[in-house]
Image (cartoon, rainbow, N blue to C red):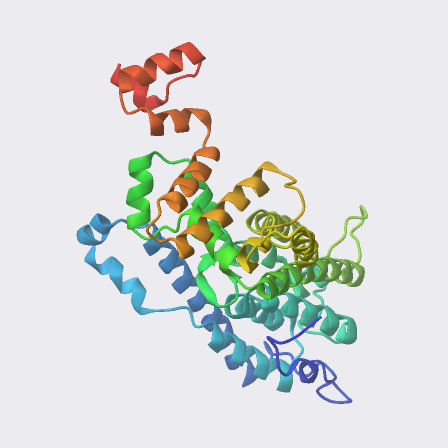
Length: 389
């Protein structure tokens, strides 16, 4: 597994001295305690700035008109790089402290996405294994190692949300895992509401899908690998911390819980599988070349490279069939931008993903006719329609 997000990874695992491999206790040191609490404040400030930006993203334009001071939140951006640099200095030069490691993991997840998340967990796991007998903060007399891993225990909730805000494609911050879920919900919205949200900047599902189809295949394979590494590292982290922390009197493991993180990563994998359905089939070029060879032997004109790329294995699912239609739409948009074919195909795919009541509302503009259709089909009217009667 790579550790590209932590260039000085090995140095962070080096003992600080023969006498005290884990270094000083930051909380008790007269000078280092100030640095420790400054790091904690930097982390808290980054979290608060992040929450402010999140609230602003949910505000409408009229909200800013009623409260012009709300725009002030945009002036402070989360400075996770500052958190990282302070954490690296403390861990490399002063103390092997799991609270510092926890804040470092939070920062890495924000700055380097899934790779930073994996590398941070790997650092924590290896540091804990290597320095457990002297690691800071030392176990509490009453709570034992619960105090040592207290900050790590919070990662299960804090990072589940942060992971969904990371990029799907490494070089494009428009497309996030959480943004995909918003795009799915947008598909179910009434047409007018959908159009209004797109005008305000919400990215629709077809834009997500188009970006995946346009992405280099190796980029998608790399993302798939990074996701798998994150799942594996999360599992290894949980196993290591459970082993080191031990069990309580009832046999329950005392290590930090990772249930939310595991469910989040599983959800991200499913999103990726949906977005790349039909795009990462095994050796599609080989199948295409075989078909081209058969056509050439028969004296027929071989298909172009663009057409050949569509010659893959039989469609395995409904979603994959829709993905193929979108790829055909892409072809027509690029080769015949004046043609209505691409728009018609994309509209057909959007209709194909709609529940029947939403589809009928999109197709039938006359409310009386729509009510009659719903009645004959046994479909309950939506609250908006029932209020019109």
